[in-house]
Image 1 (cartoon, rainbow, N blue to C red):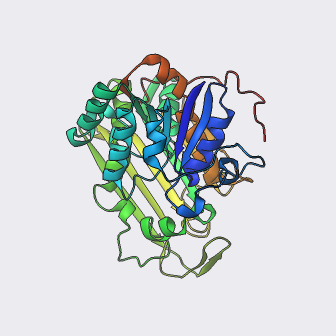
Image 2 (tube, helix red, strand yellow):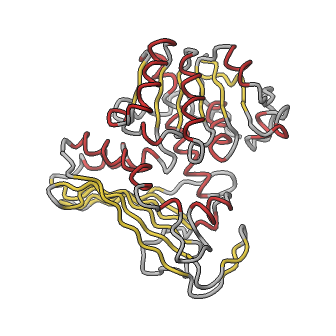
Length: 359
């Protein structure tokens, strides 16, 4: 059994605790939290399970890493604290742990990552013997391995398009929805999520990763952003009122340009209410979906819907992304020290998991 730590118990961390508990090769040995109010609570309680796991959450990072765990699922945020997240992850790798995380956007395509991110990781791997695999929670597999797999089914491939289509009123992160994404904010304020260069910073690595796998050279990576206001004031069950005239929908693309045309596209289509931007693509279930479209011959379209935590789409997306990360841990341990990306780590069947810890 591989002793495994989950670092963080937010939306991603809750799913990670459940995934580690369900994995036949992993043993949950510690859970790290930032909030002192969570310290001492059982991991099963924090993860929304109906049973105790016998692991009490702690804020003591030093003690947890001193025990030299075999693996760390780093589920703490990297959005607003990238330097701190990198330092935490480098520390864990330097202690010999296999680390899996969505927190370091720059390492989605680790070969093209900036030196100030890549070099400390490589130094920690060299000195400590650990490993790192970074994959997204939007979800990573939806913007790398799934479109690449589906592209192989076509005889002619013209465009690879990955879509996340999401009703943000179902997302349990009010501050992110209002202030990062900009829902309910004045239209003359550009949300941080789509400020110039930010979409490329976050999703450009996945575009470059797909280009590498497809064997094409990118001319450049471009951004395209559309935002629309609410025509009427709406009331949401989770986050209250959003006023008419404020941002109600946003659509952006990160485009990999090949021979002057967008050929590899990661697209996000988000709303706070279905009445806004009714002509844009909508999820079949009304809440959210991930979609891969291969334009070519034949034209192929695959839509994935995942739910968790009582039918919540956002939780389902997190859970599938975490499943990809946690499911890679035993492979990474066997593979040995290194810096890995989604093209290195194989998709694997749920061997030994069927029916396990079904609660």
